[in-house]
Length: 260
Image (cartoon, rainbow, N blue to C red; front, side, top):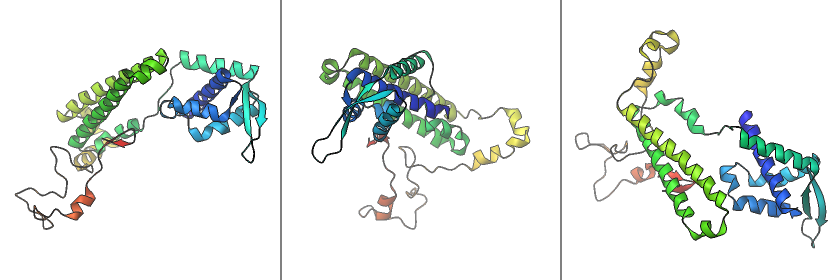
């Protein structure tokens, strides 16, 4: 619930701040400006929620309708401005986010809590792959920061914000590689005395039974690729690759929704 409130308050702050800055302004222009900032990616501002948020903020007395324009048969366009109550709300939210720490939702934390459910080689490979994906994102951000688009068209503090994203990713890259090394080294997941507690009685069994369910890696063949010493009954000739094998190949990892 705390996480949800943080995201909601960030959306409220950004919409109030943009109306304050651009007023009088149409909802369409608020939405376009937020999307130009890619706020849907780093601030969890959902494009489909912006018009609803404008109406709700108006109902709460934080915004006001300055004018309504009707052009032909098109839907009416409302122009918004901020109220004195909205100004107080904006200033409170702004300083709240500047002076306090907010929690970031990342489903990886939930997945990592079940680390023992993965075999060690898969967990290590996944962490190294995560580091590789983060490096690709950082390389993309650095290239954008060096481009004319950033240097000529964006305020300097936008570049500073991207530097923060890069620094955070660099920290996670180092953590991923360090933990992968510890997993490869066979460091136990639990202290020795935990094995004696009834609550952890099945822990060792679950770890031992963990099996790889991921795709092939450079040092791990696909499950349907047989070794020379153990030929498969479904093995095809080298000149005629099996269509079943092609259909089972795993997709490549993605960075921001695009395949690498």
